[in-house]
Length: 300
Image (tube, rainbow, N blue to C red; front, side, top):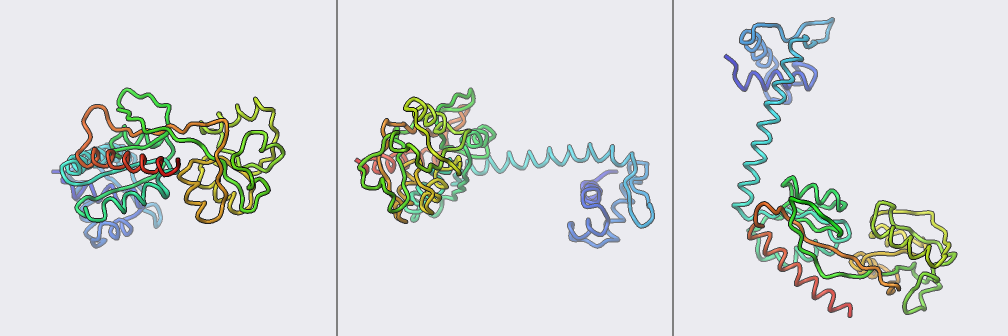
């Protein structure tokens, strides 16, 4: 009769390539692995491995059998993930995934200050581009996502945040630093760190500069505005960034100026529409919105 220990030993031998490797991974002796394999062969009624020189090779029957065993283990893992998700929703666990503009500085600072006395809440934070944030929330790997709009998805509830504006960032001691605000014509013939071509900011910026017939040089391109700021700090010239990244790098010496015409930055919370957010997720979204309001007030 088959048992899970035999199947685990068989699967590990296949994946690791040998009995010795499987024994190390399973933390049992090599003879114990061999015994489990022999018991499994007796139970299934066919040979699973054969010697070819010094190598142990799986038989064709074993490889076919492995496909079914693998499906069973994947199914068990999925059940484990579901159980963990249910447990996390019952306990004080909060999983947040946000775009890098927020996740690298602004969000961590907020979380540490807000939850420093609420140590019972376990918080997992990850960063990803908007498409991956959406995927993580849809698949249940994150409770709350913060991403860039526009967005539509049948399984997602969207809660827009107050709009912000793109700012211009300049290298320290840049000749345009004397200006109180920057316009497209100021970028003429300048070295510019341009947004990644897959970003909404790139599409908007290209349209603005094309409409004003602006020609500039660009050696560097990145979808991440904090990298834009880092390159500008290192002397790369000019760039466009979100106000969160700009604020952090301003402390290090870059110059930050308003940019006209206004390029809005529209962010939003997302969570699964099929179930209400947990108490922890709701509290987080409320507190973060208040923090963002305070940030915007300080910018006026």
